[in-house]
Length: 186
Image (cartoon, rainbow, N blue to C red; front, side):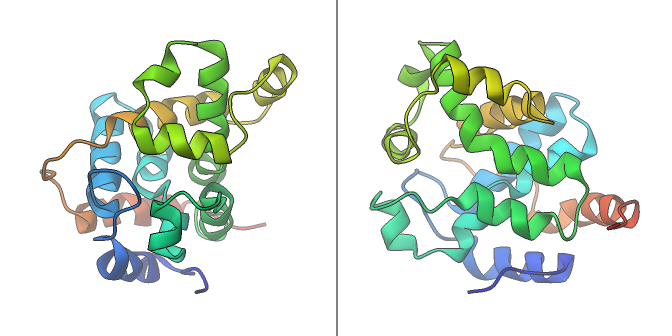
């Protein structure tokens, strides 16, 4: 499946595949909405709110059963960032590209962090290379938007509650349109 190339296509993708699960107790759409709501509640900038909403878009393009069963690392963060970089500014796609690295970073810098991960996140961490070492952590800290990626990672971890969100995906379309309107690919 090729990735969406417009906001309308992203909206359609979430409508068609947002009900899928990926090893967590919530659907993709509920996870996305919970993460975006958490970002809003923290007063995050628009780019980070949209990154929180769309950070797992790469999962929607993969075989649900393979990903849910942890058979391989699908590199969903790289797939998602490649999709988003054609539509959105760096403030959206760079944190998405780094949100898995942020999990690895947090496992290295905050040893208690691993224990707070969901079982699915602990399993996927093994496939994603495990916690960073000192050199990897230092390299991560030099990446553009690394701090936004850490914030996104925390929203990702908290956005897995078994409840229905108070917002729907379409309520974020105006914010996404605003970001795309100010973005010009050079």
